[in-house]
Length: 247
Length: 67
Ligand SMILES: [Zn+2]
Image (cartoon, rainbow over all chains, first blue to last red):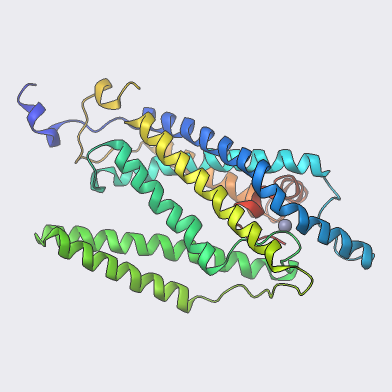
């Protein structure tokens, strides 16, 4: 055994089950923190939009009333927290599987560094990219008739983000196998990523919904900033807590 | 923290084997998220609508398209 200690590539990789368990624990923490953030910050940005919906519903009776029919606001606050918590756990399960697949290809000497890097990529694909192309909207903004189209655009943006990341990763592997210098590899990778993301943002259609005239711009933007902040809390905690637990 | 490395020596360069049950679990997790987040009563009919309404704020705040 003493000889193999100096040749790490001959050692066994860590087993999957403990990795999964620790990531799920991190997902619970991340989901809980993001859920608390949503109660403290995002819900405050949702409130004016709901007031607006109330006003509209009062103005035209019989119109589509989406908000308070099935659940009270209090119950929806609980649902918002639990939904975020659940999203954190689900994300952690998928994250653990993807991390197991790509760990040996990620740069970084510790699992903490690698988990944080993968979480950063995840935040880029699942938070930043959609925020640029089809940003989050509070209630009262969307047209219920276009939710199918918007969901398709959202899905396409995520898919394009995943494919872009895989293409850049394959390119980096190829350049490294050809012993291309780190600086040149980094330059080519960043350039390729910029072109790919430019194509994604330029070629994909945007949201078909105009923002209704009676919705003040700051209601929309407060909500978008709050939503992006919530996703940042989720991914940052998943990366730091997951990395710390796995390392 | 007890390290995975301490529990079992690990390599930076070999692939972690993902057992088949883990893939099944991953698919289940994605499906659960889909039900909560996107299913507008398509798969679960009435329950899908109920779940949608209950988790409604999470949908919006996590940036998913909604009404
Ligand atoms: Zn909605």
